[in-house]
Structure formats: structure tokens, C-alpha cells
Image 1: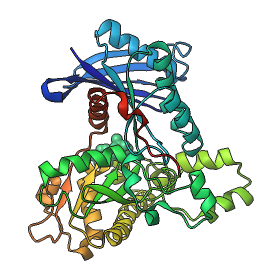
Image 2: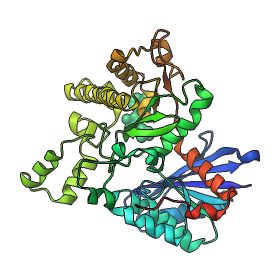
Image 3: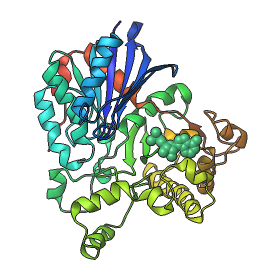
Image 4: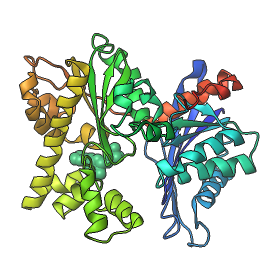
Length: 404
Ligand code: AMP
């Protein structure tokens, strides 16, 4: 059985999925699993594609102190118990910097180049690279592919790519990269089947999950994003504030005496819905709560999605469709209804029943702009990229844009 392993490694968990390669390059999901609680209370959990449990085991903390150890436990389980020996491994890597505009087959040179972007994504990039390094060391003949969250946005023009800061910093890599690119790419590839008449037109995609951003697409390509240099910018998120006057950061440093590491921790973990509500970072809890601060957080979220939609519609010079995706976008009819209210000035209306049913097309009959709900699948996107690089040979390894 030919399989592709997809790995998404973070600081405290390594998520993995296995896809079976069927005829004509079709991919069928077989296993979804994760090693969670790395360095605290490690646990391996895995389910089959239909949700049937395959493994649920706790490990002592010394057995899985870090990401490479988690990768080796998951790999050993897959090899010896499930008899999965993947043809190739595809990795989610948050930052491809200015260099990479598409996925790439990994070798030691690529890993070194990607290490340069650790400073740009210190909370994600080191963990994304750790399993790549350990597979390179232990299974050097297994092809690995790095798929970047930034790559889909490399089509941005100079106006979308710059901050108004001295050029030298842009040359060093201080740019508006944009993230969630694998999700947007999946939506872009799905649109021709779901809505062929608008797939190539002006579309805003709202990826609303625990991380949240929006992408303006034209011709199926990204022209603008609400995220920038890091995944902190743009929309409010579960624990990140979204757009923030840099003066607030200066205030935290100069008036509150916070060191850089403290500010980073604060901005990534204590703000957003959690900070504003003081109740939770989970939209389900906030929607169910009667706490006034929780209500403010929900209102704020919908308001900012609407505000940013206005900005992206201006970037597109109009709007032909709006798409909701990710955890909140796919599952919360309440948030979708609130966002649609914010978009009413654009002529958006929802069909209440279709919205409650989480249908694919949820706009009202008279809506000037069709509104869709499209479940995203970043892992399938990674598996597809990995298989296609595998089939097209290793020549693409060098096809990345160089920093100018
Ligand atoms: P994601 O990061 O895409 O996996 O999205 C995770 C987030 O989606 C969770 O933190 C929840 O806030 C949100 N979510 C999931 N299901 C629902 C739901 N039924 N209603 C509201 N929010 C939800």
C-alpha cells in the first residue's frame, strides 16, 4: 500500500495524517493522529478515517520530552503496528520567507535556508523543522516536502508586500507575508468545482479558526491578506489581538517594563478573544455565555471581520463572492449571521435555513453577493503537493525565488 505521511508539528503537539495513494494520484485519508502534551503529559492518539479509535496511550514525560521524540514515537507506531512505510513525508512549515513560492523537496541545504526564518516565526518554525531534521538523519532516503503557509501569498504585488518603513528592512525580510496559505490554496482549488462562475473572479475567503485571517483572491490567486509579517496581524484570534497600534507594544515595554519575551508571550497567548472576554478563547463558549465581556468579544470579532472585508473589497475593487472556512467559519451559523450583518452595505443577505444547515451556499436569493461555506483541508493540500513533487521528480528542488 502506497502512503503519504503529513506532519504538522507545533511546540506541544505533533499532528499527523496518513493518506493512501490510489489510482491516478487520488488520495484517501486513512489515519488522523497526534502526539500531544509533549514535555508535560505525552499522549499518542490516533483514529481511522471514520473516527474509529486506533490508539490512545499515555507516556512518561521522559519518553517524549521534545518534538523529535514525539515524531519517533509516532513513526515507530506507524511502522511497527500499522505497517505504514510512507513513500514520502509532507510537512507544514509556517514560513518560507521571501524565497519559496511553492512547496519544495527538502535536503540539508533547504533546511539551512529555512532556519534563517526562525527569527520571523520563533514560535512555529523551529518546531516545524525539528521532525524534518530527525527524519533526514534517521531515514535519509525518504523524500520530504516542505509546504509553506506563506507560499500562496507570494503573488502579492509590491503595494501589498511592503510596510512603510525604510527599504533596507524590506530587503532583510520585514514584509507582509500573509499566512494560512495552504487553506486558501485548498479553497482556491475547490472553487472551480463548487462555484465555477465565480472561481476566477473577486473572492474574499475568511479563514476563521483559532488563528484567523482573510484573503482577497482574484483569478484564484492571492492579491492581499489581513496578516502580515507574523501571524499576529489582522483579525482578532483565540489568543492573539490582531491589528494593534505598535504604540501599544512600546507602552508595554516602557511603562509596564515588559521584556521582549514577555511581550511575545502576551501577544501570542493572552490577548484576542481570551484577553478581551476574560472568559475563553473558544468561540463556542463565548457564544453560549451571557457574560457582557464575552458578548463584547463576539461582537468585536464579527465587527473586525466586516471591517477587514471592506479593506479587502477595496483591494479587489469590488466583490463577487465571500467564503467562510475553518473551525468558526465552518461551524458557527451565529458568527456567519453576524458577519453577514456587517456586510449588508455590500448587498449581502443570508438564507437563515441554509445557514443553520451549514449548507455550501448560504446567501439569500436576493443577495448581491453569493456567500459560501467551504470546509478547508490543509492536510490534503500538503499530501497532494507531496505526491506531485514525488511524481515530478527532484528537479523542482532548486525552483525557488531568491531574495532580491
Ligand atoms: P480551527 O483552528 O480551524 O481548528 O478552529 C478551532 C476553533 O473553532 C475553536 O477554537 C472554536 O473556537 C471554533 N469552533 C469550532 N466549532 C465551533 C462551533 N460549533 N461554534 C463556534 N465556534 C466553533
